[in-house]
Length: 134
Image 1 (cartoon, rainbow, N blue to C red):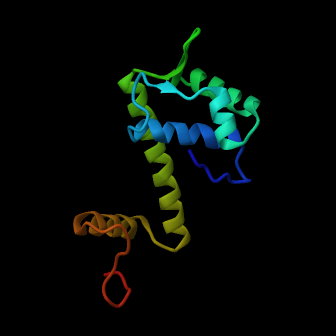
Image 2 (spheres, rainbow, N blue to C red):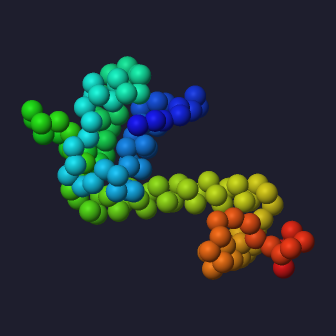
């Protein structure tokens, strides 16, 4: 596991987001065991208390569950996993739309660019060969 930490966000939140991403992308499946505090702390070279806080928050949110003597496991609730996925998608869209607005695009042009990109099967761009929007 490799995470490039951002100094502007608490480490435990970054680890939470990483684990949630692993869950929604299927790399950590429902009911699957999550690495232990000791394993993660050693692998990421961070304080075990930070990992412990991460796990406590994941449990509080219902993303992980603790089984006495066995460790922590990803929730088996498909609805919870879908909820996490939708929340992450919403955050991603908010950042995208905010960035597009900073570039000066209005809602209509944002929708047009996204539609053209999705229909064209490409991941970026928009507009014509001259770099203008119709």
